[in-house]
Length: 113
Image (tube, rainbow, N blue to C red; front, side, top):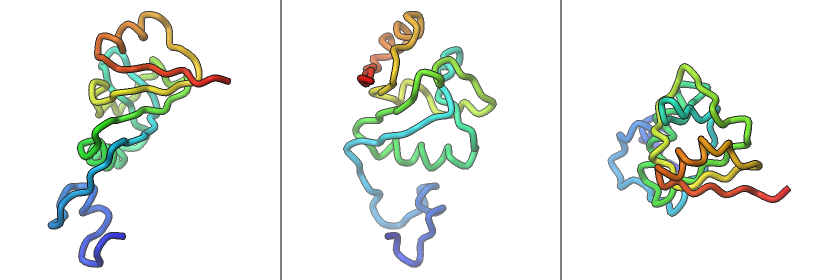
């Protein structure tokens, strides 16, 4: 719980006076993965600073995205794909996209059905 003098918005925008929390892992979701711009897409602009703040304080960033998210551009492509360490998905992406992820040193894990 945040101290009464700090709102969630203050924390999300990095304006806390206290040390920021540190996480071993940050599991996050996305509206899509835009391979052209090498970015994660968001459906809501207000999510971006919150996700960036959590990612910045995490040792590993794990993206959980089903196969429908691959190659899905959006108007809001604000988080670099290179900030992700691992992607967990339900089905392997096409080889072209898998090669792009490997070039960025992103581990891809396909969950068993």
